[in-house]
Image (cartoon, rainbow, N blue to C red):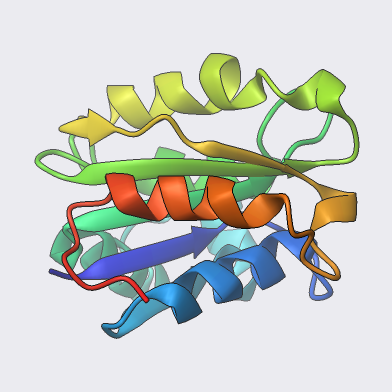
Length: 165
């Protein structure tokens, strides 16, 4: 089972990225982490799907069986960086895959962004199964709040993975 974590955060000092690192570290199998901020912005903005770095990113998506898509929530929606990347992917890029939406935000007012902003676009890309997802307040990430542990455990239990630490 191959797992790909996609970070839609444009920030180098990203709490979303730290959360993804934590989730990836809980798996007892190797996982790829794709940080979209490392992709060439000009190619993303032009929708240049044949750019070598974007082709490699699309190859990672195609090879994964489980994809965890994580983004900070800005103004009740996922980042423009994530949107630009998802727009470059071919229609049906998530076909046959389990996709896990993960969002971070500064306030519980953004809680429903997982269901109303992120889940629909993941479904449109053909995900076989979009799990219930996870929304985490920024204040719960560093240090990781103890009340976050059961929510992370429940999320990982939903994955079709036999070996989660």
